[in-house]
Length: 207
Image (cartoon, rainbow, N blue to C red; front, top):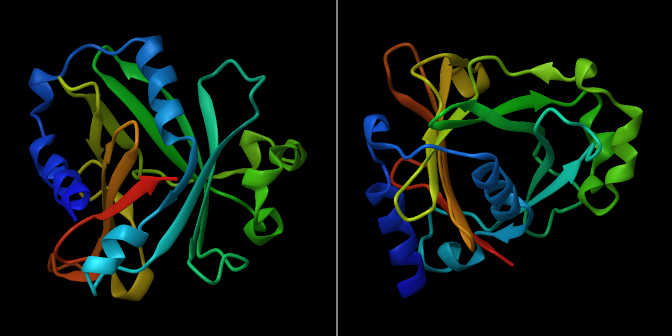
């Protein structure tokens, strides 16, 4: 329980103003990708919060011979339904400016054919970045905090969404060496929440 409280406290405490952000380097980008790579689970949080589902999350580098930043395959599934992931994406991480790392989000054509691809990333060589579907406006812009963690959000209302009556979505993330906290929400034209957690982000502990 203590670990969860500390993690959720960090989620709010690390919302630093962008004007205070330290500069980022290639070493910071390398470290961020190391933090994000691996298997994660929200099981511990789900045990103490009935509104949180037990979700499993995998991230794995792909196209490692490319020189334009890092590309990660991302897969999420409800525990017990791992063979039917509900979200599959490819993230492209690169240095955006002196203080920012951008995590661009792409959809995958025929995504289900790549289910479990985190176990065998060679299968992604049948794809090229040009074949991906750019989720424009859904980039998360990450800043480094004084603690060496990373925190970021999507900009404004630019990430369009039609899921469950939404018109736009927002994403917020705090990424640490042993956990990440993500908060994805959908909003309608009136600014009302129509999907996503209303009270807190999901705490994923690294397995």
